[in-house]
Image (cartoon, rainbow, N blue to C red; front, side, top):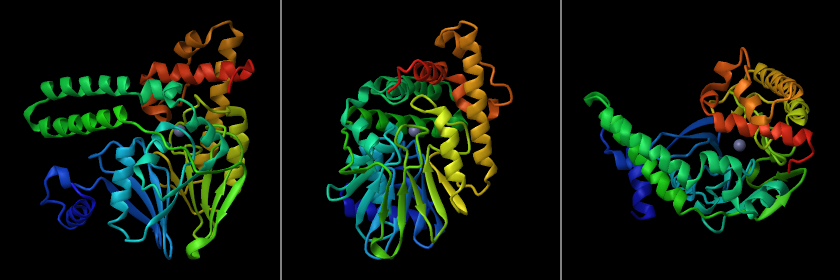
Length: 343
Ligand SMILES: [Zn+2]
């Protein structure tokens, strides 16, 4: 389908949600948080894996995070064309993780990609060697999910078949997209901050310290008091597998010091409650204390991960609890950091 036609169909779909067939259903929903500032999330027709922010300025658009594949990034860029006909000028990556930055190549070549130096460094390396990509993002891991969805469709009662079929189709599309992955590292990197003042709006890209990765950037709009945090701060449990949990607690202190009204997280829904920051700090402190306690008892990382109780945190952790490989990555990370063996 050509771009103009797909834009037209997306626009029509937005006005007639009950009357369109599945392949023209919009891939994104946009929530306007302030004039021209949108929180973008996926509708489920395309696997996006993360949220994005779209800022429409006087003569151009700034996008924050590109989703999980070039296919998903392209779907975001196409959906933005239903909001505005202004061109996308900048794409910011909050960090290097696959679910936030592997969509970069789906954006038009003239878009400038911006990110922290660590983000650039990691995206210029072989991303298929990143542990979290191997566990949750690789073609092999998605093939496994496709096989599971096929079984689920076979077993589904009649009433649930359409939803199961839709999920399978989305996963198959995602599998093809991951197999065809191409990585586009940032064109311009920085190590502390970069301020965009074009197009009648100030947008601050801030590195406030290490946390979820070595190079997390938050995107702050001082006039609108809106903060896009990527995975540095989200409503549920953060992934620690590439993190610096001791420093992260301090970095969250710097986040709390920003005068924001809304946090737009990389996963989950926008929120205003500053208690979310205190909860994240407490989780990091309790997680690290429990892991270090198990190590002091002589357990290796795998055994410690299996023994972790994390009492009181099960709702907060959600699906991660049922993913032992992800939990092991997180525990191993702390062992490596404490041994001086982490990158
Ligand atoms: Zn992440």
